[in-house]
Picture (cartoon, rainbow, N blue to C red):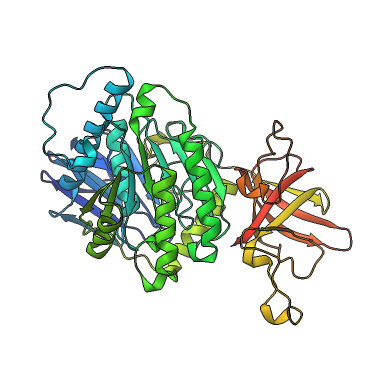
Length: 497
């Protein structure tokens, strides 16, 4: 047997000098494996383990940064890869240090200990309050807001202080821990891994797959039902405030309470004609976030005009800081975002199916073995009367021209309307449904908009509607009965390829 058949496959080595980063982008259907050979390195604030192989796929775009220098080995053929000497990591690390000081002071107050004599003169006045950092991250499209949130979160949990910050995502287009159309929040105890845009903020235990134990997060989620905030800003406002109230009511130990909150936002919160939102609408949603999460720090990524707007509006009670945008941020077009949405829904139903580059057999996802990550979803027949389905707001409204002369609307933007699956206008086939938690049994009073205030426990897809037999077929990650359950449908659709 020739030695060529027995020798291990070799990748391409890259040597990174201190404070530089290796950036890469993957095309459709390709994957990449990366191993840290020597030194120290991290990906969006999560430390890499020397000698371990990390797999990336599904059009992942990421950067490996090193503070002290390192050597990495790369397997696969990324569409783009290069080393950059210009990174914003020093600025991001300085922000983390300032937030860490706030956490330490807040923890002292919780424990009843007086502040020490540390010099706080370098901190903005509003940051000298002995409160946990509650951070709102704003920025335009393709500015790297989510990356900033991941870096700050990962640095926090790596600090060795038992911090568990609440990470909040109010961008319904991103999907975060489940599927697009959702806003959610969860406590983070371990660094968030990066391997695919499917799980930009880690993997949740309530969505598939569940085998990544280090990221087995338990998010609280509310269903908005659309990927664009402009579809129903009033509904978004209400859900943000619901989420904020739940975060405020959360119980936890002293370290969790002092850890604070980091809120990731959609690009529509920044001034942009392409967002389709009016200025008063986006300002109202920013205010909803500031009020709901009691924000005391606003970070604006690479947008001077938005920074000035926030300083004029909130500068007297909130620290507003402009931080640089990374040169490695990739311009993401609508077709890419559509594909990521499809990846997320497919992964939710079927789990992870990611083939490593040729010759790689021992790779990991976020540091954990690639085993038992696939699912076999259930296809169930459900009677029309078994599952109550609602559609919210303007999606239920008839056009003004269809109303009788002199009549006014009786349906508001947030009023739930029950969907009749037998109706030709139900539009249920291929629609994504959010299955809601049951109402609180301790609350005897029911109200019309109650479904808006119920969190999500799972997601379903309607694959077929049989009107003559009054049954519909539903795809679910797990088997179970849906009799007596309530679900909401939005504008999100998914169809198996």
